[in-house]
Image 1 (cartoon, rainbow, N blue to C red):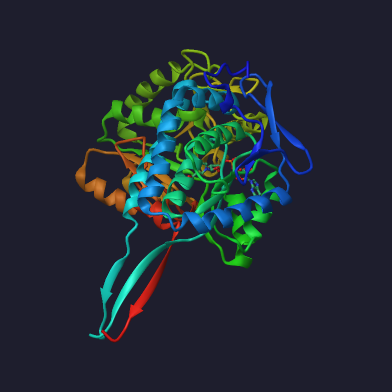
Image 2: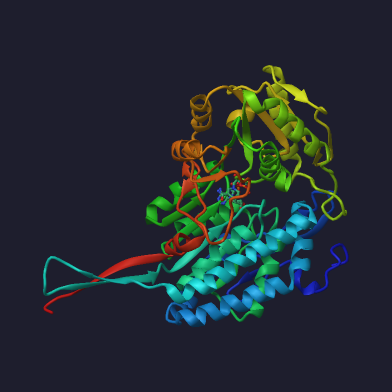
Length: 484
Ligand code: NAD
């Protein structure tokens, strides 16, 4: 594909992968995919139908019957080979990602490596899926607690991390002995398909992994309603997550939900100013502000306000907005026009309710949005209670720790939160008081393959990453041995 200038052009696929075969939709319909930096069409993928999805589910059922009986070592070898192939193709995968998603190339390279880390970690974990032996009140009885793969699983993933949100799911699923039907976002299918080319090269058996590109509702309905699919793992918005939970109820499917957030970022008077400013930049502006864990509300204590503002503004003014493929760009375009319109609406709403710009006012060109810092933000503004998903930094000012924690927890979401303090007693108090699944203390980065990732309240159910991520794909069975 000339537009992409890949070292290995076979990684760019415009077909779905069902039952071990690259194919078009049953009815031949396609969906175009564009480049957010230019609006140009990059290519198209099949608009897979319910019939295509059924075929993938049936292939996953058959493939899983064999895969479940493989040893942990055999599963580990397949994942390790796949990991190495991903690492050997970092540059091409990053170019595909930047072209369809917009993020700057350096971040895309980072995501490819992060995505690969799940394959490696779960390759190692595949060898350790052990149960336990329990004694009971009855001296003549022992109980074996067995861990077994849950069976056929389905994954529905978002556009903001087009590779990592997939490997975070299929790594543990395959390690546990499950099969998976994946529906990537229709906005970023090419990264998922390139990953699948490498899975095929790694020798994963036909049907074990299928990738269905298609219109969300039709594919999602089959995946949620099928009694063959025993687990759904979803990453995306809370609104869609609720629909999928409802649709999954009839078959009492196990569900993991990685949903939206509204992360507070608290900076206390005793914090290290430079470290806090760096943490804000890392958490707020990565992926142009389009991450589920990005700081949505930055709360700053009175005593550090002036110094922090100075440090943050110097860093914000140094950001370079531009196409992700251009050297020097640090903020790429937003995913689509609707995302730009949402940022504009949030900023206008905040200004109309009394917020003020610190530095430059909002500027947009196409899907490019220049970073904006707002002060005088209050809890009634949309920036305070909805995900803005763009490079907008809203600043609140607070006086006491109690006030800050109350504002931070005043949200139905509970995914990520951050706080900067050098007071050890405050570390314990605030760490325990924040109602979020993940908390960063003196850091703006909290995602690692070895650590459970996930939210509380309306931010989700279940955890991905680490040992907990593998448990999500296993059933626990008790085998009672009597008469001993
Ligand atoms: P989205 O909910 O619009 O879409 C996510 C996926 O669901 C896509 O594949 C989409 O095609 C599919 N989908 C949409 N409607 C569907 C339906 N009716 N049936 C079946 N599938 C359907 O979310 P998005 O815009 O792609 O991603 C951004 C959202 O994801 C944000 O809210 C962000 O916070 C969240 N997110 C959460 C995490 C996390 O780990 N908690 C990580 C990344 C993104």
